[in-house]
Image (cartoon, rainbow, N blue to C red; front, side, top):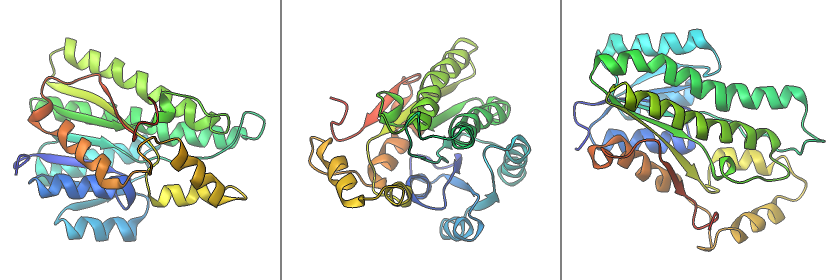
Length: 249
């Protein structure tokens, strides 16, 4: 129960990486605020953790204000923020529409920016904490058919380092790090597979680029979330933690 007395807010926590992270933090004693646009599933996850659910579009600044206000009203503090909500739209520069590009940036990059900005005042009042931004190996290396996702996750990567530097040099006590998963077996992956004509070939390709011989599971990322949320990582900030089965070797 290393996180007993701590309060965590996890976005996109109705399923996949977010749900796994929420469960892992709760298992270590944290009070968890679950947010998602999927209200029915999000509420079910929150109830299973005896936590609070907040309907939440991360690209909406007013929605972020409400999420932080409800967290403060319930718990009086915020110690851990996991910016996990995101989308993946496949497409090259020739295939991607401006609408699709903007939507990806709005949710994956601007949503993370808004979360960090909204959470900082409450976290500072509590004496510090840990911000964990879920990026991707697509924020470290390019793919021809992920032009929007590459741009968004690369932005999250360097933006997080900037925020980490600000928080460190202003002595807020807040650490900021990114996690860069490889391909993980989630509902989001299913949505990506549905965008291509030959899903089996795409999956074979995904497996092939991971030297470890298989893709990852949500719990693989949840363990890194726990590490970064806990005092085990008290000297870690501005880091890009790669959890990818060797895909970026």
